[in-house]
Image (tube, rainbow, N blue to C red; front, top):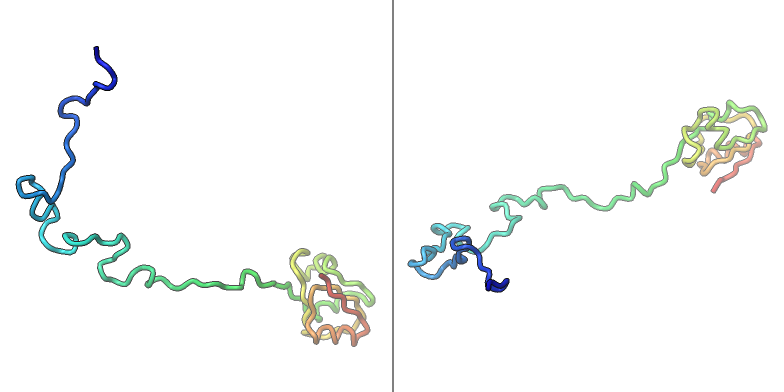
Length: 147
């Protein structure tokens, strides 16, 4: 009776593993299938070796850390643009957005001191230059720094 442990592959279906470097009679002796001399006949070559040319990790430019993506980018509003509002107006970020001075309500706003202001305004922004704050207060207005 045939049993599972008696099953064998068909004749000729398998072959012995080739053993290199076991004498000339094996057919794989001598140079053991590596040809004659040369780099590949000796020790193994690392996969990243490029034949002696400048390696890719040295050819590529260095990429390091840069703080730019963490910097705060302000929307800029100059004093000369604020002069369009009527006297004693509270100029908030929403008012600036509605009048077209800034493009987004959600990005911080900085007021710079270019130009002159002749009206007393209450200006609310995230940041002010020192000259802008001085000119607004000199015109009788107030400066409110938002968080």
